[in-house]
Length: 461
Figure 1 (cartoon, helix red, strand yellow):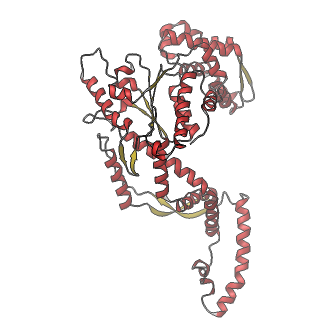
Figure 2 (cartoon, rainbow, N blue to C red):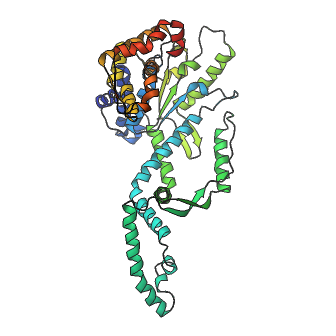
Figure 3 (cartoon, rainbow, N blue to C red):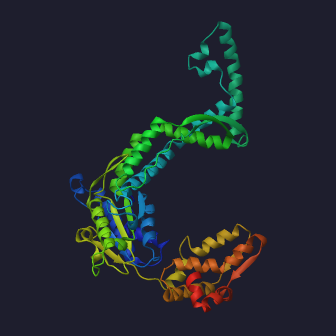
């Protein structure tokens, strides 16, 4: 669990997300409260439930990015899901509990990766020995075990004891060649595990996801992967052997237990499009509204705390942090059923973005779009530079189009920059070594035709 203070968390989020300070503070406090809870006496700790959050605002203002960066910062299991993919049991769609199973899969992957890193040095050492065994097979007497070296006649013993130092010297010579990379391109034949062709897939009938998972596990046990010889370069074989040796060194039961605990205590579920399942109070109770309310009722026990059966064991959802998000243009959080509203006590409305924020988005973040495009074209030997006036023009254009057409927030910058650099990206392979300055005139020349034709701009920009 990250022990960053709320101020430090906000500072880290500022490196990637412009504005939205109120929302950043809210999620930073929520994350710090999780750390605080871990420091409390266990008897009281279980009584402290997470304060779930609803983030409201138009698309492209940073709702998802805030949650994703927060999870990456805290190094905790994170899963994003759209509420619209779920339906009430009885309709065609996914079971709400499947998002807990997906979160558990992410937790397993995360913990397995961490445990692999812990044993990597030993796994690399074992893999190196196996590579040398492929290049220089040991004598049968040495392969049979520690006592095998002295088996056989007295003459044989003397012969083997005489030859062993020569074999060891050759092995050490090959070891040095392998470590220096001289053997990387040499091919060896080794046995690799090939998954069985038997695959079982259960259609996404509500409530059947877990049965499908169990059937797949059962068939995997009935038809285990076979070992087949395959030729490959030593550098590729080395990576395969590292994975195999790491798997031998890792205790799968310990991985499952640690992942389950981390999901239960630190997991974050980001439920997007929450406004799409809110029943509108001005309607006449259409069948669609009935389905939406059914999804809310199915979601309620998972959010308030229940036990979900997964193939890795039972997972409690009492302390998983739920962050819901939605534009809430045509509905509002009060349109959710009262029980679900009560499980999301914290709400924050994110601000719409204007040209000042767009300019900052283009210049300040570590992963700014301008940085990405400069790096992409640099691979072709083309150096591009954006002037301040050019970026101001891009920001002003984004604000104007968002006002005239649909407001899609910062995603508008993707469309505009791609349009501006389309010709340059096309010709870049033939422009090696050139420098190009993107100024205001260049931006206008690429966008003028579309900006003048408003009907066309709605489809292109």
